[in-house]
Structure formats: C-alpha cells, structure tokens
Amino acid sequence: MKRIMLPLLLATAGFGIATQILAAPAAQPPSVAQVRAQVPATVHYRSATVDGVKVFYREAGPADGPVVLLLHGFPTSSHMFRNLIPTLSDRYRVIALDYPGFGQSDAPDHTAFAYTFGHYADLVDGLLGQIGAKSYALYVMDYGAPVGYRLALKHPERVSGLIVQNGNAYEEGLTDFWNPIKAYWADGSAKNREALSGLVTLPTTIFQYTDGVKDVSRISPDNWVHDQALLDRPGNKDIQLDLFHDYGTNVPLYPQFQAFFRDRKPPTLIVWGKNDKIFPEAGAHPYLRDLPNAELHLLDTGHFALEDKLDEMAPLIRGFLDRNVGKRPAVGAAKN
Image (cartoon, helix red, strand yellow):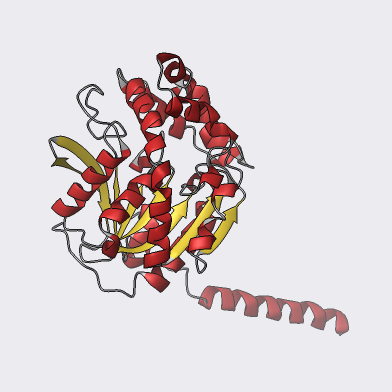
C-alpha cells in the first residue's frame, strides 16, 4: 500500500505546483512610463553669438529650474559633462558651454582674438545674460575654476553654490607639473613657449584621461580621439599656448577668489580625483581654510574623474544640489 501511496502523493504535489505556476500572472511588460524613465534626458545643442563669436552650449532640464552651470577644463569641452547632464536635468536647468577655441564654439585666429581667462569670463557672462540665467550653481573643473571664479567676482550675488572638481584656487596646488609653465609665465620667449608644445599632443591627452585611473577599461578612447582632433585643427596649438601663458594671470587673483569664498560662503562640494598630477590633492585641502563647511570627497582616480567615477560622483552632486540649491526659487527662465 505504501508503494502505491508515495507516487500518488508526489503526483498530487506536482499537480499542485504546476497549477500554481499556471495560475501565476505572467510577467508584465514594462509600461510606457517605465520605459520613458530609462531613456536619457533630452539635451538641446545650441549656440549664441556673443561679442561676434559663436558660443556653443548644451542645455537640458526645465526652463524654470535652478541653473547649474558646468565649466569644462583643458583639453576637452562640454563633451566632458555628457554623462552627468542627464542625472541632473529632471529638476535642474543644466547649461554646459564650450569656450572659444574648444569644442563646437568658434576658434578665431589667436592674433585677432584675446584668448584669456578674463575674456572667457566676460563671454560666459554675456551668454548667461542672453539666455536669462540670472543665478547659478557653478561646477568648475581645471580651466573652469578661474573662469568660474572670475565670473563670481563679477556677480557674487548670483552664485548659489560651488561644485569643485580638480580646479585650483590656491598656490599649494601648483606643484612640480607646473614648473615649465611657470617658466613661460616668467619669460614668454619663443623657446619657453615651444617647450610646452608637448602638452597639446596625443600622448599627453591620453595621459590626462588614464593616469591615476585604477581601471582604464572604464575610460572610453573616444575621449582622446575627440579632443585630439580638435587640438590638431590648424592654429589651435597657438590658441592653447596663449592660454597656458595667460593662466599665470589667475594666480594673483587667488586672494580675491579666497575672499569671495570667505565673504559669501557659498555651499560647496569638492569632488577631487586624488591621483591627478596636474591638479593634485594638495590643491583640494586649502579650500577648507576659507570654506570650513565644504563637503570634501577624495576619489581614487585622476584628472577627468567623471569618466570612471560618475557612479560615485553623481549621487554626491545630486544630493548636494537637492540640499542646497534645489530648495531655492529659480531666478530667470529660458524659452525652450
């Protein structure tokens, strides 16, 4: 009898399980809303003429949202922010531009156009005026730091916050890498100028993206192909060498930048690639002297931290903005 009952019980249990499986609802396909949530945000690619020069910029997000202005470094362009922009643009009006001589903006001959950081700050100011961005959180990186801080000196009341990624405002950050550039500041001879030519070559561009990075497979080679193609345009080498020389004019302004930090006390997030040889970790810590409430995060990466550490940086940046900028009413709106 036991021999008969055991198979019968197993068969009955199997039938019950099969019935449950058949009765379970089939997996539902994702809704349109769910699919749409996975689609990258719409980014608009625009340009405006400022003082006779075409300035290209990327823009995304609600026209009445708080503005986040992304200021790029050398040798890249607004392209460096392509992956960050969608993480912010559901709530923030995100603007990332190319300076003249970079990216998709005009690149006038250096003999007819002043490639200086003061001029760049004026052009950024002019663009923001045209598109109605009257207050903004500044994201500054590399060259973006002196451009953004010069802009802050012009309109300190407009700065709602600072995000600093490997952007210098203290002499402690100008370490050995800068010695040949400092020699060019002191003596702008043809010899010292030509000594910096290697900084615009492909090996240096690759170095900037890969040095200090633990997992280089996370860095798209499209970056240096894109940047180097623009560096190799006729006349662009002289543009970059002019900017290397003019960078020296930023250093005497460091005390004014620091006074802005102390006087205005903008909410500040520092996200710094600690392995960067160009803007090393030594340049990050001094910010806390003037901005003791700043949030400092040192990341185990190099110069272009967004390329391999976006998964760490985006939550930090978004959280910082939501706590400090998103609560404030937007000033100025674009017509999209």
